[in-house]
Image (cartoon, each protein chain N blue to C red):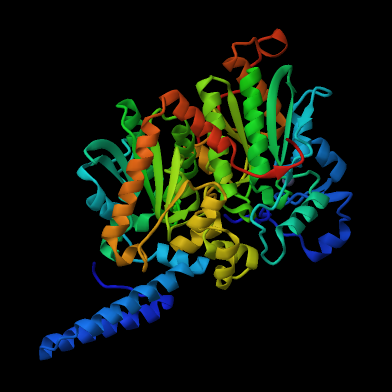
Length: 321
Length: 299
Ligand SMILES: [Zn+2]
């Protein structure tokens, strides 16, 4: 990991981490034995992280979900999958680097992996566009999904985007059409599909690779119809009220599980995914294997029927049975 | 998704004009400025007789516009939104719903009906922009899904008239998921070769455009409508530059290949009828071969 960014509510955690570093430096310079002190500080750090992370406000989860050191799709790819061969382009206009995809192996089995990809720095974001796809990104994703269907391989998608890119070229080339076509296409694909929200699930741009048999969410990921900032600007007439909007939108992984939209919340280590990539990846790997095994056991007609039923049942109303 | 943008008038009413125009009798055309007798305007389906400018038309009037008199049957009239998240912004969501139900002339943002369109039995769903910006929540999604499933069951074409600022954010993730739900039903129609005609009116943006509105076998739009994914203000804020003239209008979308045709509202019914007769292998209207409209002239 490059530079470590700190969030406001992590201040106490950062302080203890710095104490530990100073103690280690001191021990090295003077050859002192600080094992006992270190152990006590590390215990303190762990319980502090647990306390802070168990009690995050929804807007703080949003900040964690957007944390610049959080693992992205290609990081999980390295930690969980093998034999990745990236496939490029929508065959219509260009290759969109904000969505990556290709063949990969999970425990030796071939899958089609597709995910949003944010850049770590400005240079990378020139090609990744901060993980905000243009129509050609969604069209590439659908092309790869149809290939997976054709050859009978399952599809795993990783969602991590602020949203579909709102720009002139995106509108000219049919952003809405591209998203809509994906939604319709994914509904009937005859192969098992799992989506995982690994960071930000931003509205239609997230859903465009998220119509799947199962939806998993990392503990500190969020999924929402609109960003808290956008919602606050429209309904509260002030972007500053984003904390209220984040709470009202019920966008955390736990919220979505309680609302029946997410199937599973994958626990993150105390301190969040950005503090321990390996443990996060290991929990994600276990969940993917388990859910993929379940889905593979279903006859494909039944799989597609259940997917349709799942989406038909989402929503609440009164007055007509 | 920004919900509440008024239709941008090309000329502004001056204070003096407003005084001279009792709004219940006269209306000034926002485009050419002609003073129009409201009754006459309504008979012309809210299209300015002078310049052809399309003012917004209430959802109930589209039912009259599209379906043969006496054939219409409305569905899920009593279906109402609930407040699944307990959503409170400056006002609680249930208060916004009550106000909309009082003022918008429908129980939610969509009317679902069946009936004959020029004797062809169809299912139709028409959005009501006056109801919380035509926003799509659980009720809109469910009524569209049911209309689609009726189409499928009865092998009747589906016609959806869209007008929406996007998702109903007060229903949070449920509103987003209606995009998946409606698109999943349209996938069934697609596979069963049941025709679906989408009509986009002013404005159609956000989650509605990015789901059923763009998925027609044929996508038609009224002239001059605002159509897009992101709202123009969001785009301007993102790219920090002014948008080109005519951006995100029906004409812009036609030029960029997203629409099959732009159709004057007064000809919408006959055009849909003619299209369905082609698709369904039926003879032209009244058994005659209709005179074809001239091909759209390239710019
Ligand atoms: Zn006029």
